Image (cartoon, rainbow, N blue to C red; front, top):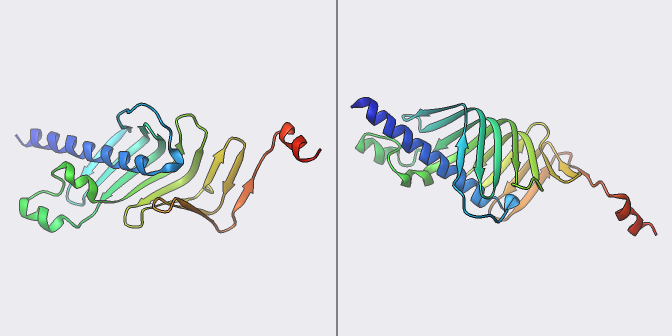
Length: 190
């Protein structure tokens, strides 16, 4: 009986994690690619759930596919907020329903982070990406983080994308490189 309950709880956590990533991709307009509705798929070598701490760990070769884009990283962690802990302690569990999906506070992807649109028109790379739900921002660090579109790119030590205002801050030491084709150069230098 206990094994069945653990299995059911594992499926609930997997569903909650998938829903969290779906929310991430649905919010990021940098990756907006209109396609047919497809389910969010999360693959990893291993998934671990810590029910007491309200944390889901995705270990090894993490790939999150959504109709809006793809996120790849070595590992990822979903932290659920503790706001419901008092209520859930009364019922004896910490993650019981799909309504808990909205209670996550942060998602952290680490190691060789690559976020891209399906057509790879925009590719974002960094060593670490943190989505903070309270601030509604995604912070990219390490590598240094870089946003590439074709041969052009912008990089800085830290990139912060505000999902609410859809503004990006590149700091400190931002560097922009625009590689222009010979035909485009000819237009400007005739």
